[in-house]
Every structure is written in C-alpha cells, then in structure tokens.
Image 1 (tube, rainbow, N blue to C red):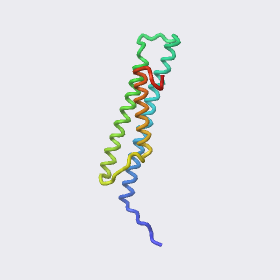
Image 2 (cartoon, rainbow, N blue to C red):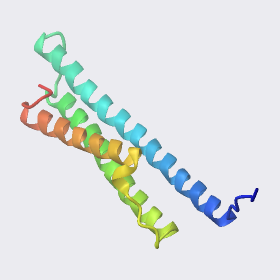
Image 3 (cartoon, rainbow, N blue to C red):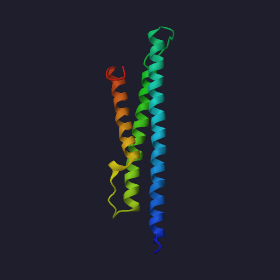
Length: 130
C-alpha cells in the first residue's frame, strides 16, 4: 500500500484560503448586524412617530440613522468582497477560483442585494419592506 504524498505548500495555501474565507464571513456578520440594526432603528422609531408617542425635534433622524447604518454595512461588505477577491488572486494567481461555488460569496452577494433593497425601500418608502 502506497502512502499519499501531501505537499506542505499545498496545505499552507489551503489554510490561507480558509483564513480568507473566515475573514469574509466575519465581514458578513458585521454587515448583517449593521444592516439589521439600521433597519430596526428605522422601523422602531417609525412606529413611535406614527403613534405620536415620540416627539422628536428632527423627524427624519431615525430614517437618516437607519439609512446610514444600512449604507455603511452594505458598502463595507462590498469592500470586503473586493479585498477577498484580490487576496485570493494574490495567493494563487495561477488557480482559477470559482466564486459562485463558494457559500460565503453567495451569502455576501445576497446580503448586498438585501442591503440595497432595504436602502431603496427606506428612501422611497415603498417596496417589500414597507
């Protein structure tokens, strides 16, 4: 029975790629927190304003805070994906990596789409979230 030869440089490359995946997943969690918190602030304060239980000096403040958090979360995730692409290309330029088979990539794309939908929904006060 012959032993399978494992190249240490291949293992190091695989560990580095997995570390990049974990970094992208951490950015996904951060962006999801910011987007959901921004949307929650907006909807929570909107309910109080509609019930007239909250008198604010700036009536658009909850909307602006919500839009800011959603925008920052979505933008941060876009930047994290670009950084992830560049890093994977840098560590293995000869390897063609199929991003659409990567679950963290797919989740990040869906979260960016959700962030854009929420942002547009709040700006125009229409859409699937109003």
